[in-house]
Length: 80
Image (cartoon, rainbow, N blue to C red; front, side, top):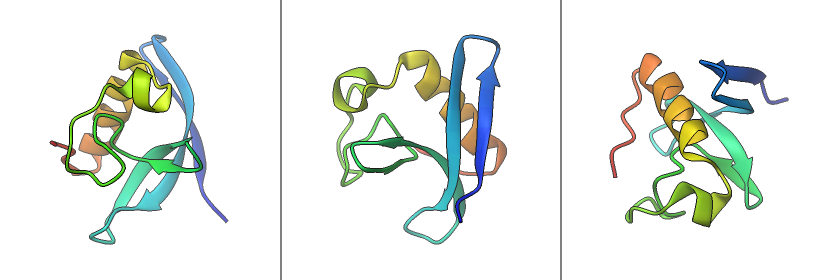
């Protein structure tokens, strides 16, 4: 069973975040999009290329910023 939290980041970005692990088996939070969990909406599915979060995943800049802040608070750096 996945853990889900509701994120309200300064009332600018509200969404449900899902707890998962990244490729290094470290805990990370993500958003369900395109049939999988996206924990870095500014990266392509393979993680090698920078993308526009809205165009690629339907995630607003505010949501991308909030997800980045949430993951940084757990020590995850999502630089592409």
